[in-house]
Length: 148
Image (cartoon, rainbow, N blue to C red; front, top):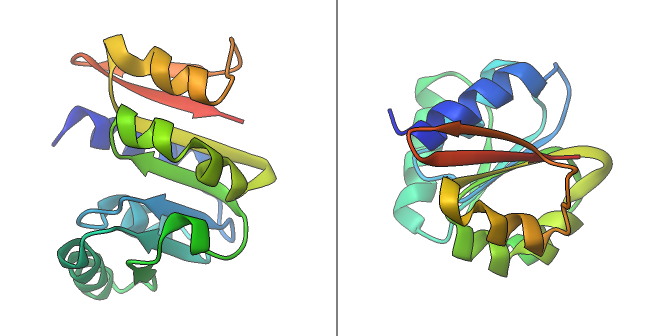
């Protein structure tokens, strides 16, 4: 029900095509990873620093009949690059993980950044050197930034 989750879900629905790879960073309950898997993304990898979130993501994947590789693996240690990287985690964390998030993105991939208050999204844009290349959506004082 949170505006950032709604924004991310709408973007995932628009961007995921069967067979694209997805990384959900800060997966929480796994709703974004599950949505991507339901839409045909393969593989779907979800990471979170909280073991309770990892367990919730795994349980939600089973409940929805989809396969998600979920773990507490640090982002820097996640192997490979992904067509879509989603981080709905807050601006300070996004800024601190900017390099690792960029490193996980495939050359022609898309990065979705959310958990951002609209008046703080400039911090995230600056961390990625986005300078006008971003698609931005707002809802109820929150923002989603889409970078390619």
